[in-house]
Length: 586
Figure 1 (cartoon, rainbow, N blue to C red):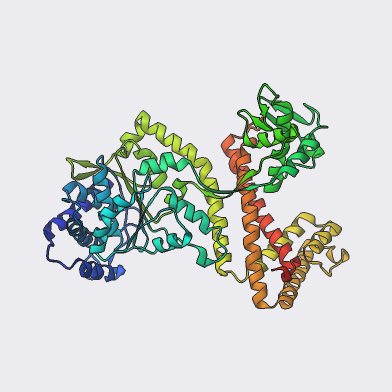
Figure 2 (figure 1 turned 135 degrees about the vertical axis):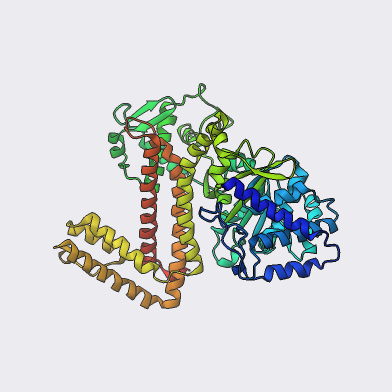
């Protein structure tokens, strides 16, 4: 049924364009402006199939209040775009170009071999999407050259659409570029801007407007090949003191008792963890410390000078992991090079899958159809006879050896990357709220969560509970006040914490208190999130051993526990700074 629906809808759009004929005397700017002003309520929600849920596309073509459905809007826009292309001197717009653009407007990926044809089809579809969307991004595998982009700019200008080319440059240039109706760029520029936006200190520093529509040329290359290499913003940190500290601390440890060696890996045993005060507490900072200790052990017992590595001119030479390299520098008494720490990152397939509408073209889309279905949730259309769109049969591709291989590969890939994507989405959503000052009660809710956690962890140990509370905000409660029934203790602690927060806000004043909360929340979130990213990389250390659980089950379990610990650390650290920070230094 879905195949019939796609073919029928594309046929309706193409027939409507043909009926309109040449528009040589039309005022394209006025026509497009009127089309964009037409009430959006006339468009019904799109559906992948008449009996299935919506996908957020331009629409199904059902008639609206004025009898003009979304297919009518797409038809008018495509006819206008075809005329604009002719006036811009792009050459004849062929039936295949129109068919590919119509399929893109239906929310599909188009298998199309001709590179120039893909560029024209993407531009035609971008014009159609710009009728109802303010953020339409045309993405190419490599950054588009200015000359190539210049060929299409007059086409958009004829329609009164603003178009921009996103290139390397200062943030002011990028911010201006994103205000255009249609933005052209290579794969990675928007990804880097997304990461930088989530490191901004004020809303004005953010450059991206939104992610509504993405049209990807060579979509399978972008998602399946480039998609595995993240856009990373990193900085170097001097970890020499900690590297030397762990080198010294692991020296007394005994093989087989405190640690075990397997190949080039060293693993601490429960006894070794206790000796180093690194018990199996899954927090970002604890996991990082454990990894650095095990790297120091590996440097001491798994890598041998002049066999696994050499020292030349005061530098460790050889194929060794980066963390172990730093441990070897400490072992050999060399200057320790700065450690590269990730500040933020995102994979292209994660970034583009978050667009409200994700479509594209590729000369190999049919081969990659199973993976594209998994990654982008989009159907693949093949142009039969050069112009007739036909949906690729998913069952046939899935049952082929290539189809099964692609689906399994994507499933394995998403198994791990989706964990990071979910964590990032939650943390970044919180950070955006902090940045905009949208959550006035965050401090109150967070404090209640923190002290509630203290009660749950410490009760009935009144002395330990008192120490936790007193370290946080200098409570007037005594240990005697924290004895008795848990529910009563919890109520007493919550009331005391609320009173402490009210006193702090009164001392600071509402305006200063709000700004302090915002700054503290952002700084702490950024620091702990960086540690979380490092800790996620180290989770591979947990995926082997005698545990009966599968590596995937263990990874998900550990990752969930790590995320919970990350959130707790953000909350506890932020509350501590909020109560104790001297505002005169701000």
